[in-house]
Image (cartoon, rainbow over all chains, first blue to last red):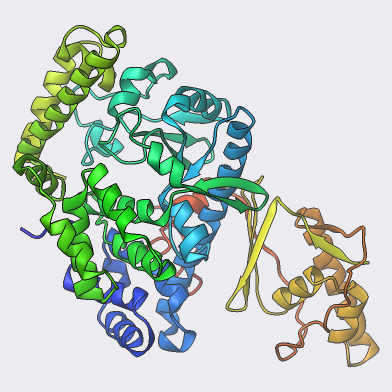
Length: 396
Length: 146
């Protein structure tokens, strides 16, 4: 089965139109625009249209398509400016309380690598704070008018579908942001009444939630000043790894933009410290994702990835369990993925019991209930049953 | 009289001859094209309004009066929306003549298009929900009620 991170041939053509240079890029744009109906475009490709607009000269495209693609660029520019303004406001609030703010993913990529506010859409604003200051940060964010969203259970659960039947998590109350939650989840979404979204990360990588997991990332980060506000940005080596780890995961909207993000970052950083990248990949247990995606990027898009980096990633010992978890996370969720999710929750439960027994309720089921925001185990069991059936039937 | 951008609240950029402007406090979005973009960029470059008027006007007195009226109305609209503010200090350098980088367009009363519903602007799908000849943010007309 083709992993979710791998673009289809038509998506590859669009990516080539966006990230290649010179004549091959122009040829790809001509071929893609010539055989694509914009009205039928899937979500992953639609997210690349602003970048295509930025790379396409007016004479390369017919007037009708140009209006739509330029519109996608303008909308991205507008939304990104508002999200960056929100980032500046939150940085001012948080830094006044001694909390540093790191920009991740879209916001950092826009400022640091694309250097074009309209080229790279951000669905929401990804901000990271040090794990130990997460609770304070949540309080500041809610005081600024942002409401915590419901705890997301799986990547397949979109709010509209959660209302099908049975129990579903409600909006997470402020009291639900406690040591247990910070120990399991890496981030939580907040929504402002104006429609903007913010993802607060207290851990940078999904599934890497040890209290000291991000110390190296913060140590290697560098400050950037944007319109008078100072943010931290991950070192390019860590950021590249984050893009690959995130891109490797299955998502309801095809995550193919990882190709454009990674290629843009690598072109902007010809002196990338590959030893630092490899060390981060090992430390974060992301060598499988890094290997698969970098090998593809080098082979298909000609992006310069040193052969010895690929070799070292390939030779790094990986347990069958880790390899299997990587394969599962790159595919549409199945009932078996639920076992991986439960296994992860159990590992986090044991870690918390060891570290702070007082913060952990007695019994794994009670722990799961508190993470999901359920009142009793019956709600979780009924959810697990419905979700299992849904995945078995392949319903999105 | 000369003006400057109302920073940091207002952010603007000109892309392919069209100017995109956002007021980050209100969330309002504005767009300019044609002579509106030329005048906007001349104002932000520090040109006094009288110089912009003189640059456009090379015809009859009647034409000059129309340009003056159009310019005043446009500047007043920009001030009313808090997109520009009077500059308290003169520009440190004399800017180049407005529009020297491009051929001078015929003067047409500039139109400041304004879109205020931020939630709607964020929700409009730029491919499926828009007028095909205008693009985002102009939405398709809703189908007539049956």
